[in-house]
Length: 400
Image (cartoon, rainbow, N blue to C red; front, top):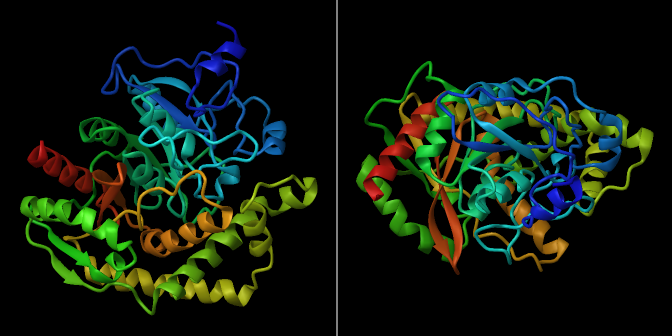
């Protein structure tokens, strides 16, 4: 099969149309028999790395190294099947790349797949591979997991190596992944996470953050209510709490300031040097980021330290938040850029808490509304990643 027909085979528009290059994997191992895709931020030897941006692709050249996280999957026996489309420079949440196309949501093709790990979520939801690597800075795994009906995780910050990976906001960036089911997710977790240094106890304090639930659309809350009850039946009655410090607007703007300054530090020189045409929304976000003052960023950093201490006290070593992953089901593809931006801003208010504190968040596809999937999340203390996956395994067993 030639490269042109290879690209035509990808009816989900999930993969970058690169010429296929053999990527060796171990013949045996804990992931033997599983196939995986890799978001086009991670280097894979023999392939370029575009970051979803044509000028970046032109500058990339063919990579001579493979990112350690990708290599660990290959060493565990998983088979690489291609590099997946990312939103441009990973600075979006819509899953619509103005240059390389919009990956199709396998759970509901009329709705966006969600970004920036859109191609990875599309590939898994369309059954083109068993799992796929994404990255999550402000929700880029959690949003697509919600939209495409997948299990997806934002790990604790720094838990998985991002060496040989294009950055967006280094103090917020994490490596996550998607699967269609919990057992497969747990197999990958064993390889990527190992064991927790301080695992959650068998009996956790389940907490329902009422203020965060209040951000969800009323119809989404109604759809999630039965699932919430089933999880409480499994893990114990939840206690209601309010977690947000100051208010949601403060958290939103402080998160955006940190992300924006770091994104400009990473990509600003590239943008100024080459003046690439940036897609809708992405251009405006980088322009805004370029104008941030040092005082604004310093205030955001100070807020982050207070927030980390605050949420750390709430969670302790045994607390787990149970909350909606996103405010609602995925927007329709036909939604205007203004509507998508409004949804993104609402979602960021819900998603930014875990990112600012470096907490792990695991989204489970346990509900639906209007025939579209809707996720519910477990958020634990820093370093409780594998324990959260074990809780998901308990929930899966109880609901099966």
